[in-house]
Amino acid sequence: MVEPTLREAVHQTAHGVGHQVTQEGLKELANWITLLNHYFHDVPLVHFLHQWENVVFSLIAGMTLVTISFFAVRKKTLIPGPLQNAIEYAVESLENLVVGIIGPRGQTYLPFIGTLFFYILIQNLMGIVPGMKAPTSSLNTTVALAVCVFFYVQGIGIKENGFFGYIHHLMGSPDDLVGWLMVPLNFPLHVLQEFIKPLSLSLRLFGNILGEDSLIAAFIGLGILASSFIHSPIGLPLQIPFLLLSMLLGTIQALVFSLLTTIYISLMLPSSTHRTE
Amino acid sequence: MKKEEKFYPLVRNLGMVVTIPTVFAVGPFVGFFIGNWIDQKWNTDPWAMITLTLLGFVASVKQVIDLIKRTTSSENSDETKK
Image (cartoon, rainbow over all chains, first blue to last red; front, side):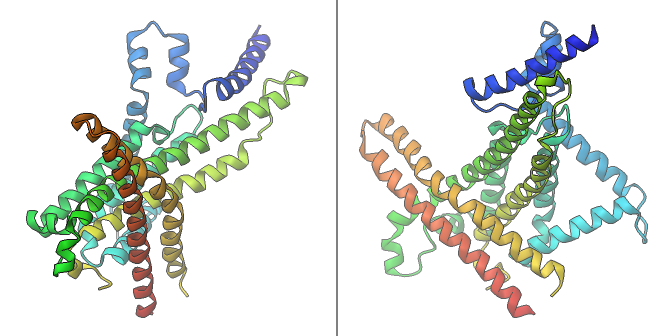
C-alpha cells in the first residue's frame, strides 16, 4: 500500500507545483508547517503556526544564530578551534568591509551590520534545507529588516548631526545662497531618497530569494514529471545546480544588504568622519 | 595582491550592480504612492502624483550617483593606501 500512496503523493506534488506556477503565480516548496497544516489543519496550534509561518522560521533562524554564537564563544582559546576560527574569520572580514567604507568609527556599527549579515544569511540558506523555508522570500520579513535599517540610519543621523544638523543634511547641506535657494527642491528629494532606501533594500532581497526558491521548486517539479513515465517515486535531481546557485546568491544578497546598510550609514554621518575625506 | 584586497572592491561593485536597477524602479514608485496619498487627502488630483513621481525619479538618479560616488571614493582610497 506504501508504493501507490508515495506515487500518488509524488504526482500530486508535481501536478501541484505546475498548477501553482501557472494558476496562482510563483510558489515555493512545501515546508514542515505546510505539511502539518495539510494533515492536521483542525488543530489550533498548527493553524497558528501556519498563519505565522514566516515569523516561526525567522525565530528558528535567530535561535540558530544564538546557538552557533554560544558554542563559538563558550570556550574561547588563544589557539582557536574550528568553529571559533570560522566565526573569528567571518567577523574580521566583515569588520574590514565596514571599516573600509566608514572608517575607524565603523566598529561602532559593526554589531548591528554583522548581526544583519549573519541573520539574513541563515534565513536565505534555510530555503535550501529540505522541510524549511527562507523567511526572506516573504516581503513581510524583508520589509521588517529594512524598516529596522531605516530607523537605525535615521537615529544615527540625528545622534551624529544633532536634530538641526539632521534637517540641514536633509536640505542638502546648503552653505551658500544658491544652496539655500535649492532647498525647496532638495528637501523633498532627500526625504524621498530616505524612503527609497528601505524599499529598494527589501524588494531586492525579497525578489531574489523568492525567485531562487521558486526556481528550485519548479525544477523539482520538472524532475518528478520527467521520471513520472516510469512511475518512479523519486524525481531526477534537476534542482542541484540551482541549489548551488541559491547558496551563492543567498550569501551575495546577505552581503549586499549589509554593504548597503553600511553605505547608508556612511552617507548619514557628518562628512569629517568619512575615512575617504 | 592579497585575496581580500581583490575581494572587497568586487563585493562593493557587485552591491552597486544589483542595487542600481532596484533604486531606479523604486524611486518613481515611492513618489507615485506619496503623491497619490496627497492627492486623495487634499483633492489635488493628479498634480501631486505627477510631481512626486517625477521627483521620485530624480531622487533615484541622485541616490544612484551618491552610491557610485561613495563606492568609488572608497575604492580610490584603497588604492592610495597600497
